Amino acid sequence: MRLAAIALAIASAACGKHATVTACTDDLAGPWRTEGGQRWMIIDSGTALEAYTLFDDTHPDTAGIELGPRVLDLARTPNGGEGDVKRRYMHAGAECLGRAPAHLVSCREDTLELVLADPAAPIAYTPCQWGRPEPSRRERWAREAQ
Figure 1 (tube, helix red, strand yellow):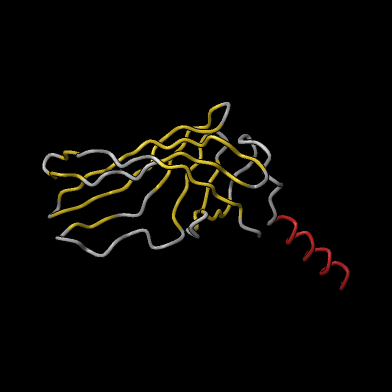
Figure 2 (figure 1 turned 90 degrees about the vertical axis):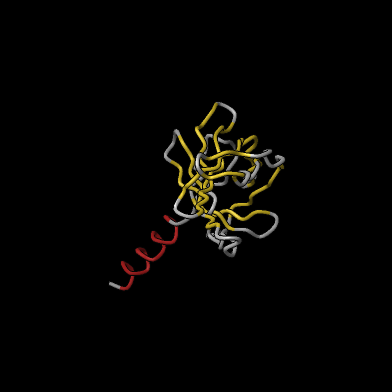
């Protein structure tokens, strides 16, 4: 009985670990941390990647604007992924969904390299009108130990 419990504990611990990432075609699911310390959770469906914040990505209400957390949606490509960073903006009952380009450009040694930008805030809400886009930047995300 005791040996069965130990075997079950070892099997459970092993199931929570992911193989080392060596390519963008590997399973990228799980928690990741940016160089700045922000934590993200990636959901990997095989053909697409979704990344959600694991930190407070909203800002205090400024002039009646409600800001939703960012979400990354990437379609897998042979060399990485292409898609968008999305963020919801609300003001006086009007909603605008901001988008900015996102690219997964490298995956190796449990590190992802992305080029992305934050969606720009709308300059008008009815209808949604957008100002100048935010500049893109390169980010490195490291897989968190599980």
